[in-house]
Length: 310
Image 1 (cartoon, one colour):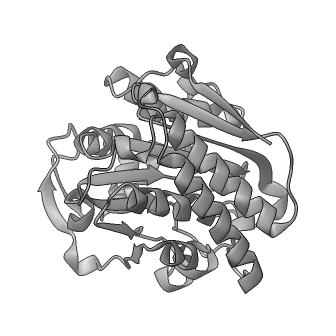
Image 2 (image 1 turned 90 degrees about the horizontal axis):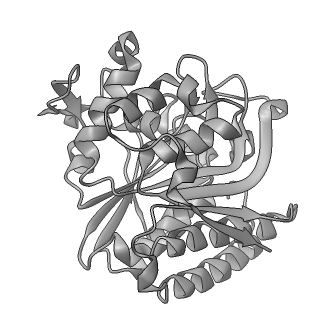
């Protein structure tokens, strides 16, 4: 939503409002679903139509899991954790789509959340990344509190991991009642891909040390967060196919108009890996997560609910 006109914003708001209303009537029989995949069978070019598509896909994917009320209880404090690491506009797919983030905020508030915070420990300067990504403006308009990570507030927490035994973690995130993990699918020069597990690096300090055994570190933080990180939404509306994680060249971006939501973090990353042309078992973090019992690698075995958006 960067450089968005007032007219476009009003159109987006109307679409989001209708989507939230739809979410309230999600069927209780969907509350056992593990994964949903939403796709748009058209390719909207108009910015307002593109935003409306993202809103609709996000809402209907969450609806297919039983609606946001499955995850949010009245009075909950929610932290929505997107990729906002890079000073890049949405069209370059280095950060999560801002309309996906804003829609999740609206759905949480409609489900009764007391507050919804949005933030990430960025790689580029936060004041630039939050604005250029479009996420700050979109999330604020949706009712979120935007949080700039204060590096002085990281606190060493006992993660009880194989490598991450005690590690500096941002306390406000782990103290939330619910963490919604919403990364973008993209290439990564070290990890091969960025997905849901990789996105958790954005809540910790001293991340450069993780690269000595990145897969195990990702398993450690994922296992620690599982009780609170009960929902993941993986944005593949646009994906970054090369030169990640920073991107910057439009030729590396592929528009797929799809996203997935679910409760199995390994399955979602496996789906994302295939979008990038990889076998899930070839991605070290996915193979390690499966071996650690954090989820299933064969996401098709979950019979994901398929949603086609007109």
